[in-house]
Structures are given as structure tokens and as C-alpha cells.
Image 1 (cartoon, rainbow, N blue to C red):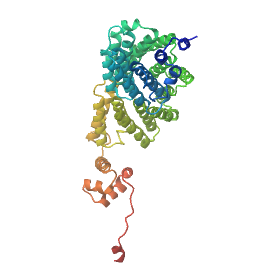
Image 2 (cartoon, helix red, strand yellow):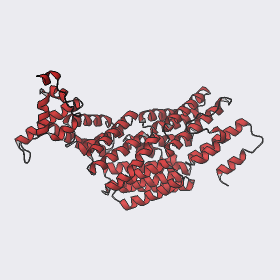
Image 3 (cartoon, one colour):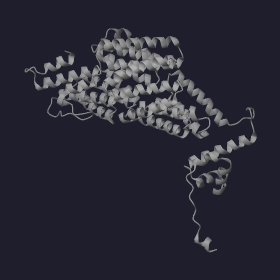
Image 4 (cartoon, rainbow, N blue to C red):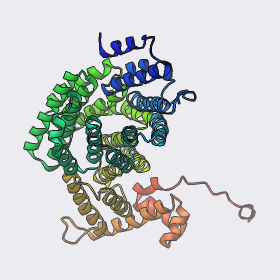
Length: 492
């Protein structure tokens, strides 16, 4: 008999009041959610559970009981919405948890307030609202007393997750190492989280700073995390660490080992029917395939990944997948499609507040298309936005990419130089002319008349220049309309 079965049997105790039974169901659901058994948690809630994001009937319950039910239904909605990629699940989960938070505050339940804020932080994180996640997690930590060891550990780990996704790796590692003695005294599941999070931070630092010693430490941390999660019976979290380990191995060029770990993760997630995490494994696999130069294979995987992330409303993951699709399309020579995916990635990340992801997508757009398929104005604007979005990053690789794109931007803005190899004045003048024509057409949204006016040309003169010297820019104009001849002209 497992823990869930033994707790369910307690519901048969005739001495329990209705309020006691509801609170027992909530405790069972909390334990099951913590171990990644979301479907079992749904069953444990029984009639209290009305569906993902659906507000439970709590009108006749005591205030604290109602708050507990709202909290559990909100947390479970967030997790089920994430693994099953249910549209708007995170927003609905956030609303339920926030309602529970207000009720706990009204009853001066400081520990429960911190717990609700901790869960609220994950909703903000899943939505890509990292600044909001950081603020609410800080509040959760500030409200805790000395005795709440497990909850403090969870908040610290989730806080470092936000720092990692915003490129503040050294800050995250400092938090985890400073609290090392504290985490060593925790249960196996918490130890698993701690080791897994350290592995994630060290992996990012190892690849960003190209340090083999940090990569070795990251492999050890992921391996330790898998061990502790297996000891705790948390299969889903073990699988997450297999995925993270695979990401590191691919970045080290150990592609066969990466695929082996991805296969392990995928088997576990498929057994749990966890479509959301299967999509994340597939996204990692697509990255490995791109590194191997197998663009067509990556192309076959990514559409289903993008669809899954889109349905789940996970904006940061969606932006990253769209960025990867943009790279794949560029490598396959589908430049128009690549531009579409990369611009969509930037917009998706920016709208959700995932500015680090937006900055990385902007850098990718510059790297893939900035040398010849974007105007000088577009290159300058993209670089300016990427620099702003990544201003706080501690990722050495991102900083190096920013510098490389700054050189690219400078080269485009300066244009051809006499010292360039194979310099030819006619070619330089042609390129200079094309630069202003492209800019005018883009500014006028393809209108030949408005573009010609900005350039100081007549309508027919600009058409002649395009058709004779810059045919590659004709796709920027709006479709030509046949001009009707006037009656007066016909009569004459």
C-alpha cells in the first residue's frame, strides 16, 4: 500500500468532520503534486476538483478551508496546464492562487501566505514574467520564520530558477552554495532539487565560459539529482534531469550520449502521458540535431513542439522554440520563413516580459540575416533592443554574441571601404543606393509613391530603378495596380 492509498483509507474514518475530510484531501493532493503525481492528486481532491482553472465550490466552507482548496486547485491547474499544455491554464491558476493568498492574509496566516506566494511565483515564471516572479518570491521568503525549513528550501530553489533564466548565473550559484549546509539536512526530494538546480547553473556557466571543470561538476550534480529523485520516487523530476544532462552533453559535443539521455527522459514522460515535458525533450533533441547539422530532421520535430508550447501559453519556451525554428529554416535556405519565425519569437518573448529570451532571439536574427537580408536601420534597431534586453545578463556567451553583433552592425553602417578586398566604386555606389531604397520602402510599407516622395524621385523613376538595378528589392513593394486610362485621354 502506498502513501496515497493509506491516506485515502483515512477518509473512511467516521469521526472525521466534513471540514477534516476536505483538509485531508488537500494535504494528500499537496504531497502528490510535490512528487509529480498530478493525476493522482486530481483523484485525491475528489469532488473538490472541477477541472483545470475552474473555481471550486467553496462558498459554504470555513475561510481557511476554502483558501486551502483554492490553493490546491490553483497549484494543480498550473502543473496540469503545463504538462498537458492547456490554453490559459497559467492565468487561471494564478487567479485561484491569488484568491487563496488574499484569504490567508485576511486570517493572518503568515506561513500559508508565503506558501501561496511561492506557488504564485511559479505561475509568473511559467508566463515568462520573471520580474514579477522575483518580487513575489522575495516576499514569500521575507514572511517566513526560522522553523519552515522545507518551504524556505523550495523558495530558494525557485528563486535561483528565475535568476538562471535571466542570465544571472553567478547570483544563482552563490545562493545555492551559501545554503549548501541547509540543503544537506533536507529530505531526498529537496536534495534532488538542490543538486539539479546546481547542475543547471553550472551547465550554463560551463558553456558560457567554456570551462571543462564546471562541466564536470554539472554532470556530477545532475547525476546526484537523479539519484535523490529516484530515492524519493519522483520519476518526472528524474526525467527532467536526464533532459538537462542531455543538454549539457550536446553542448560538449557528446551527441550520442545526449540522445541516450533524451531517450530515457522521453520514456518516462510518455509513460506518465506528460505531453508538455515530451515537447521539451523534443526541443532539446532538435538542438542536438541542429548541432549535428541534421536540419531536415530537426525541421520535422519542431512544428509539434511549437504547437505544444503555444497551447500551453508558455511564452519563454515558445520564444526559444521559434528562435530555433528560425535558425533551422535559415540553414535550409528558407530565408523568408526564417525571418518570420525569428520576428515572431522576439514579439512573443517581449509581450510576455521574457526580455532575456527576446534579446537572444534578436541576436539570432542579427546573426542569421544581419549581414545581407536586413536594412542598416533594421540592424541598428535590433542591436539596440538586444543590448537593452540583455543589459543585466551574466552569460559570457550572450555578452560575446552581443559584441560580435556590435561589430556586424558597425560594418553595415560604415558600408564599403576603399581598403576592402575587391573594392569597386560602381558596386559600392549600387549598394549605397539600395540601402536608401530599402529603407524608404520599409518605412512606407511598400508604397512606391510614398517611397519615391521620401527619396526625392518620381513614381516611374523609382520603378525603373527597381526593375533595372535592384530587382531583389521588388518584393518589398506592394503589388502593382493597373492604372485605368481616363475617358478624356481616350477621346483625344
